[in-house]
Image (tube, rainbow, N blue to C red; front, side):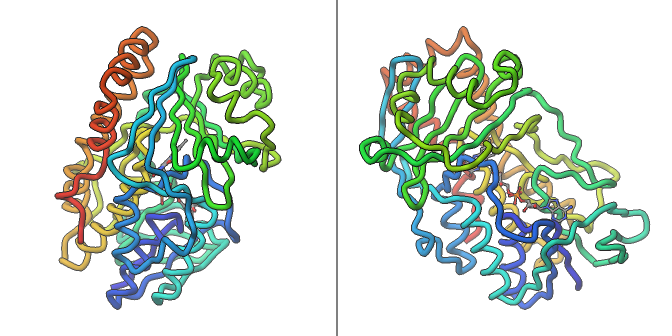
Length: 369
Ligand SMILES: Cc1cc2nc3c(=O)[nH]c(=O)nc-3n(C[C@H](O)[C@H](O)[C@H](O)COP(=O)(O)OP(=O)(O)OC[C@H]3O[C@@H](n4cnc5c(N)ncnc54)[C@H](O)[C@@H]3O)c2cc1C
């Protein structure tokens, strides 16, 4: 059987590694020629780490920053609690590249700098790569947020938010204050996540409304200054910090809550992986775990002779609960009139933060071992 994977992010690379380990010939096309920064909070959850270990990937070698505490911040108030699991702060540039190398070492053919376009499922799957028409038996669609003509996601955009990510070098004392923590900072129209990654750099990843961005005339320095003005915690954490990237990375119209539902026209040969299959609100830090779970499940389904429809049904069953709960929590915490009571609840009962964190993960019973 010939399998082609479109996209060499976490989902695509993990599937390539696992198929190759099982002796299946696979070719992966990644459109970027070299490692690149990606917009992501870069919190690698414990389930994601377990999925990587399962395919023989040594995540410890990347020297990620261990995170086991959560600070929840609103205005001048904050509540801190232990997380019910241990995450790692790792740059996507390092992680995705290392996983692609791992897939190659497992035997997958990795072709970089080639974009897959125009998928046609009319008479067997076919598509163009560099002007050549390819016709594999199976296509694993792992292009993340990028849509391919012919197989676009039908993904409603419920929250019209704009996302930004910037790395900072922090003064030693700010770095020490943030060590082993992820801070989630609530604003009236969104939130920011702040944590350390390998090498002691801080990742600030935030989502905000378009109205605020317009007010700041679309300018990053003005946006950051405004957010620091509203959050003493953020201002203190970034005091004396230096920006590492020339420009922040940005994203908009993320279809949070999207889950691919099978329909009568669904192909049995096209398997959607990662963000092409399901998108969880990013504050949970579990998008990468879903991407890796989808890869493992797709490979298991192919090995078991199952088609894409059964795979998509099973994946939806595995992740719908956590995505629904994450969406509910996000709406509750972001509705302005609800923020104060939600924050007060979390402050009075820090265990509720741990409860929320544990119930927005890929369920243990669904994970493949
Ligand atoms: C603001 C924000 C913060 C987030 N924070 C976190 C977090 O802290 N923790 C977490 O676990 N998750 C987080 N996520 C979610 C996580 O980033 C995604 O769920 C994850 O990256 C999905 O992996 P993927 O492999 O599906 O896609 P991607 O990682 O996006 O990979 C897709 C790959 O496909 C390639 N590609 C695209 N089109 C083509 C084409 N036509 N041909 C060939 N190659 C192509 C791209 O270059 C890319 O390398 C966050 C998401 C957002 C938006």
